[in-house]
Length: 285
Image (cartoon, rainbow, N blue to C red; front, side, top):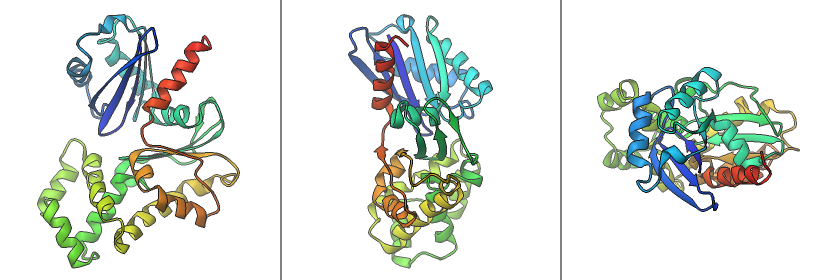
């Protein structure tokens, strides 16, 4: 059996590929070397892994996740996973490489991850090169759910949102300032909290203020990241992540204004990642 996993800040999608190429799936919380310990990984897998299957029979694990881009943290995750899959050869790679494999397979292009956080890199068909770093939700993550949530909260507390929309927001979320600050500065996953406002944005996307906020976030992502690539108008650009896909019409409008086009949207990379690894298996790689 082969296991493929795609892990974000909120959840991890897992696929188990059998010898006959049938598959089983399960879901756990998001798992990251930044926020989770070996115990967290084990607990998630113990509760999530299908009871009728034996993890000792897994021969390979391909884990794609945020925070696995450096050798140190990737090796740490490989060690965590090895305790649950003791007989497997384990690979822990960045979510950016997962996006590249899902969106482009072995083609060249720019991959744009727009989920809870954001990440933009160039893929040459084998490896990734980023012209700008991913700075996380405090300093960066432009175009992401966390970035949009941050813009929304800032405008709400600074009184830059119309009162009707503000009342609607307060009727759904606890907008007490002390609570919001506690969730941002003291909760274990503040970026996920900020991104939890995305459903509100989606439900109110026809509101001119909301549409403008999403446009501002994508525009900032373009100006700080995508504009650094001189060949952006002639190369494939793929977008993955729920935020990029949910607001694809607004992103397409921003792209059109700057003379480029998104080649492909993939909201959930896991199915494309399974296809990628099954194809590699068939080719003997």
